[in-house]
Image 1: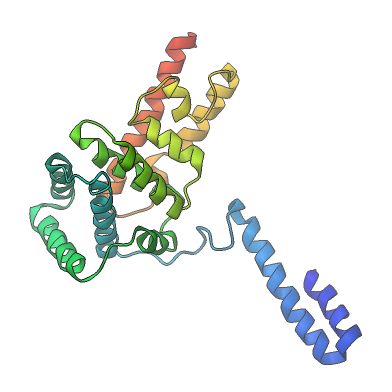
Image 2 (image 1 turned 135 degrees about the vertical axis):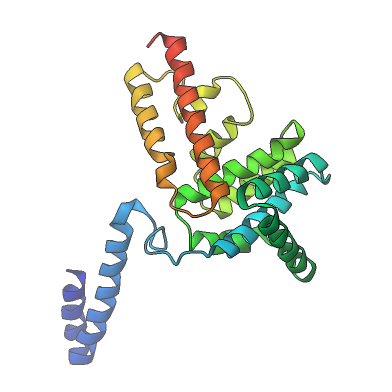
Length: 245
């Protein structure tokens, strides 16, 4: 609709060339409006993404792991073991070793940039996959028994680069760092929420974090999705027991 209005305005001021220019500009605006309305996402959101190859995804995942491990200035052997064990159990020893070798070669030649990695992933992965990435990174941070403030800050920074909203970040954090009203934080609601609101929140979160929504061939992320889905169920059951639902 805008393209025709712009064409008329263009013709009024610049005749035929103005009409053409107005039509092109209006078409561009119309296209942006359509893109923005699809799923409520931004123009450059999760629409028609170029898929990331398994090899690229694994290397970028490992790079983010190394950033989190180094976040508190201490490289914990337990965190390193957690990552290695996860990769070995997921991909097998031979493939995991090949991934680590490639990563070490790249790491020697290039500085790892969280922002650059996340920009690459934003263009090629769904939002649900990026949520599982955060879940996985928190698992690494917790491998040595606790999640330090520098690690939390670094993962929060990565979440920002991955365009993960704050409520989703706090929900995932609550699965690893226990605090008052933890179950409610996981379901992204206040403790004052009504029983109906609790049930609605659970249905929303269960749908949002269901493993089937994580459309990826990466086994590490699939496992993370299953773990996160279980945490949502556990939080709901805890609130049910508390309220006698």
